[in-house]
Length: 47
Length: 454
Image 1: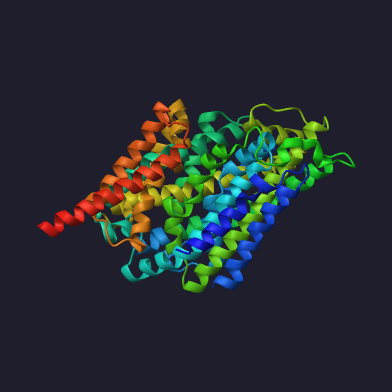
Image 2: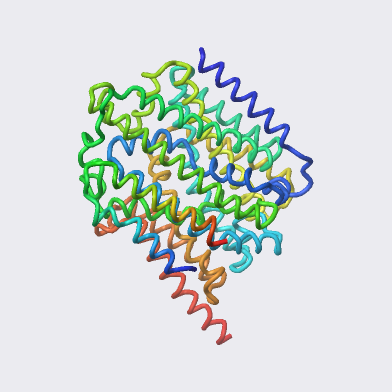
């Protein structure tokens, strides 16, 4: 298991809980970008 | 009346697709996993349609309306977890399946832990998934409430599920999943566009206040963990999706399945949660009534939009429930006939499709409260399989006794903690994982020593 990769992804997804507190769509967009980035990594770099 | 015509059209279109998709079925491999010969695109769409049930357009829209962007985080946590697990384990599981002729998730478990463990797993999975599937029936029957009685809704759902599964097994189910998966996505796009058009000009999302960040009064860290943890491992613990790893025709198709599923999941999640936020904004603007029961947000929205659009969205929710339910029914029938009874005949599988669909319909019609309780804990119950699945690839220890005990103790822990609520403030899913892994390692080491001594 790529434990480090898993840890990085989980920590990146947890960041809004500690570092984003804005009353706009920042948290929403951040989560979408992290997920899209990870999907791109799987699609283009992993395989 | 429009709803009945739409429902009839859905039934006819789906049946035509199921008939066109079916090929001659000679073996259990043909029936349950389409002869391991499904393209990457269809594999991705059936994986997505199986995963994303009516929960998305009803439950997740309502959860976002009530709790805000945390609902997006919860659902995307599931998605990245699935991508992580699939990108690593799916090629290994697919290869094992092809080399050893595995057809069911039980076959996978039996390859290391023996047939008795696979039998116990079939029972645990059935207890977890039959009530969960019943909830799908209940949900869609309520959705059709204005057009027919609750019982008639359940019966129609049961007939559609059994018919498509009986016609051509997984090939029919996969193609109906693929077509209606795209329909679900299209209707979510239309719903978001229509909700946007209802918003007054110069609407500002900042009116949603604490709903735009986490933690807030709903999404405390503990709540987030208790929602997220069972779903994070969904790709490995839910047999209906594990079985789909066997179906792509080659490794390239498998990779395509994972990536396209991820793309579908990302778009669908964004659309559904955006709809929830938009409807909440409509409430804050005084355009939409304040709904306290989150499961009624989508039905209320459907009643406020033009009838043709409301009916189309309702049918897409109906399709989402059916595509999830028929996949579960087919997987459970494979596990009952193959793993529990060791019967490889396709006839036995078809008989079990009828029996399991009937059991689910009977559960649904009775609507007892414990169905809801069991459905809520279904994913948590299924977590007890995780040590066994990791053990296939990472641990040398572990055999039939340790594996069987892990399933029994893990399952009992989930059920006992849900009913007694004696969790010391820790999410039940965390307890189930801790207990299952502890039992697995301790008993596996003892089992190994006992074998060495004898």
